[in-house]
Length: 551
Ligand code: F6P
Image (cartoon, rainbow, N blue to C red):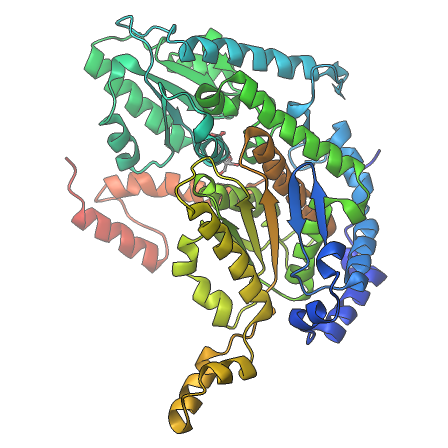
């Protein structure tokens, strides 16, 4: 197979047809679509293995969908799915395969990359993780004073933090109560300092999680943790207290970590797709090997669905195409993610990295300039807190903001009828966003008013509605359903990247700021060094020099 050279999707006939279709249907209101078709939910919802996707509250018809499926064909989505699945080097700017799906293959499967079956390697690492986490969880991994581990600190950032953090939080009901898991990511010293202040070095285990083992934020935190450990214990040997997850063995060893305690992964696993690899070590530490395998199994189930189902019954494909519809053809700039589950509260941050680092690109795979908008701004917050923060804008603001509501039907924490209240709020929001509230309804509510007061209040109480949303209803947040959910979003991002002709697996855009920070750092510390930035940056550096008091 070869990687097609030109991205000319916006020159395809279906691109023009979709624009035309958008112009023809943009005044259509979803309320009318529901009023005129009692079967709309049946037509535009999909259930798969305990996961329900309701996409009926979208500004679309059967014609919209069929054009979007045509668009997917024009972008050769099937070809790209095959290329990814088979290990072709579709991350061409880094000359890498993209095989996070291989991390969740069962041991009996086989996947050849560069003439080697990678599945046994994947399972060998899983076994090593099992052996290690079983030992720690059993209280049989002894620190310097022969005491068992009570606290595990994951030091990592980006994909080496967000994925494992979301999953560990979400699966808290399955976690062993004897181990506390902490995540430290920020180079802001208060992150590590506040965490360390709660810990005893003799019973703490640090996981230094960095694929490259060159990420400054992570290495600085790891050095700070090492210093703290050595100072507090008087021990120079850190090997019982520091392990690493990394693809860089030399750097891990140079840090002082026993090579036997390095858990590896491969260049074909992108950081933001790595929770399924050894980067998931804190997850396995919290919930154990079996449950980690259930997480992988959930993701694998979603992979099979994605690679196997026709576009018309394919959850990631449908979600991705609906996103393209708003983003590209409606000009929506953002997409909101609202998990109605406290354990999933960090999910928007994870999907933000997953989506924005993948599809926040202005050029195509071969460097060609793209003449249309690509990845949206992803943002969000847990429900119902978000209702009391930004929903006002969704209901009565001027912007089109497509939303995803994610909600489990059952809770691990039954407190009176609070779960039903939570679900009621979730369903009510999507209903209100869709329906809006028209003049007749408001007038009926304000029947006691007349004159100026009525004129003033009426427009303020109107809700335009027609604000689109998808609802993903899980039976319950379990390792398996969570695996399905995360893989669903990974594939959604992939499909959108394919439609837009993007390489979703590199991230050159994060390099420049890092480069400039390396230049500014010594300038902050050297008061006499001449500055040659713009006047704003120079002014800020000088301000810091005047204000900062080193301890
Ligand atoms: O932010 C850039 C990035 O490379 C992410 O893609 C990655 O998840 C993160 O930094 C951490 O990288 P590493 O695991 O190599 O420390």
